[in-house]
Length: 171
Image (cartoon, rainbow, N blue to C red; front, side):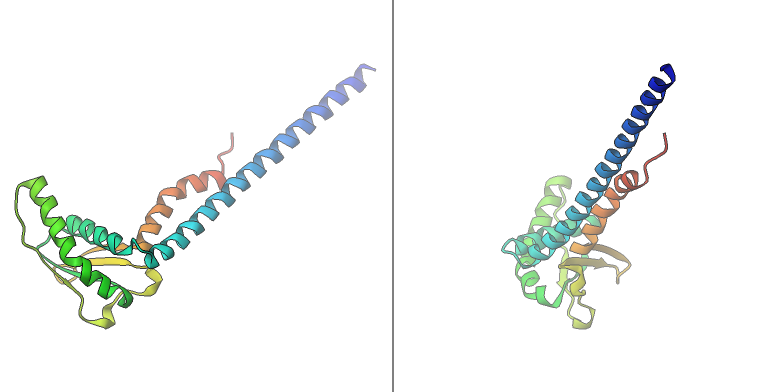
């Protein structure tokens, strides 16, 4: 009789462990699916932003950010062919904003020469989902501020967390 009880307790314990393992696996699968959906949603939103009403302001902010990162006096802005008119509209405001930020932060008034790439063969590809690439010193300094580059940054930041979920360390 005692042997039957021990066997029953062992079977119940093994069943509990099996259920817990299955639950943990399903939970991790669900987390991976959520992250994949979020990544897809971000890509879709990047494309939507590129067509949205706030896109000119976004381009202006991307240009300002790029100018701050590059810190050069002669800069060329590259964009998609479809964005050239929008970049042309916001460029002077972006340069003005950059000059104001640098004056406030350093006390130095800059007078940068920022121009849009005139060679249409060097326009950035539509696969970037929009944004800008700024270069200085004949392309030796490059700041890629395209939507695709920013999405890759987010992906790279999340990669360790995704790895931990997909390949958990054995305890």
